[in-house]
Length: 108
Length: 127
Image (cartoon, rainbow over all chains, first blue to last red; front, side, top):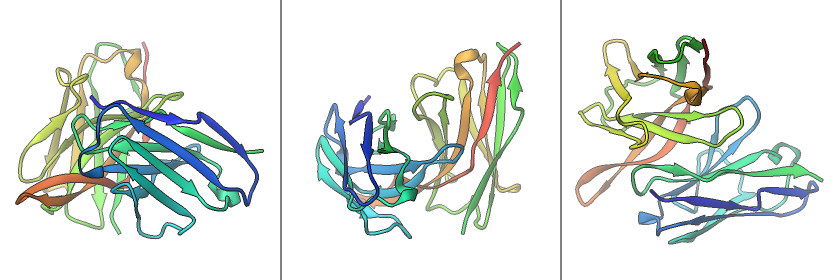
């Protein structure tokens, strides 16, 4: 199975700063079938990005995804208070679908 | 807007069968452009794909669970279900149901990304 490794584990930033999260795959992700989710305590994950770089419906343009093959990045251009959460990447290009272990963006 | 809602026992004894249902509203589960899926998340852990089902037939399961898991669909009730047999404490987790979009690649309907999730339900395995 494809192992997704996210870094950093925790990112401490202030509102207004830029967040850059990495997701590295153990094998190339077919068709760049990679998604990013945001999860807050007690809630289900919320889709942010699919196809590595396409924003989901209703998602702010502060969120952007990039990358291909084995290296992917989620960027949050200017952190708003509601952006402090855990972020997961997920590949759906090859079964079994797998998730990264998550990166927490916390308030500094 | 489609809504998904998980339901089922919150407590299951070791060695017994975990059974959950995901009720879908705001859209027909018969819609042949979506797959329906289960994902789980231990209380302090990451997310794990459990499996998926396609209304036109066909299931796919995580190989790590394949010998114990089955997913079925009841179009008349507009819901789909998960059964996990011989549970242990390691199966304690939040269980989410999700809808999966599709794309056509090479003339084949191919599952794509999760676009909707239920709120999740906590299942604890304990005697």
